[in-house]
Length: 130
Image (cartoon, rainbow, N blue to C red):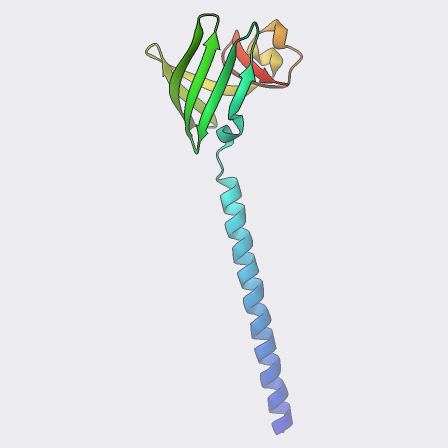
């Protein structure tokens, strides 16, 4: 009977050890999943996006806070922006503007109509990555 008790205790210890590892792995997986889903989508827009006739938008920074350089035919101008609802908002000439993802046709610019990975502020003001 003593022998049976030893096996029962050993079995209980082994099962407890396995249970702790499963719980720890599950907790680690949950933590990794949560950090991945809380990443800011607008951070994937960092870098230079080209428009027509040498125009571009260059977005730098990250973690939801950005420096935006927009170069149009009058030259480059800088603005400060922030992520809100998977878009970047910034103020230009007293007006709150929004940078949002779209495709070439969504820019409203025929020269970009064959593109698929683009950003726009409004129709006729857009940039794409090739």
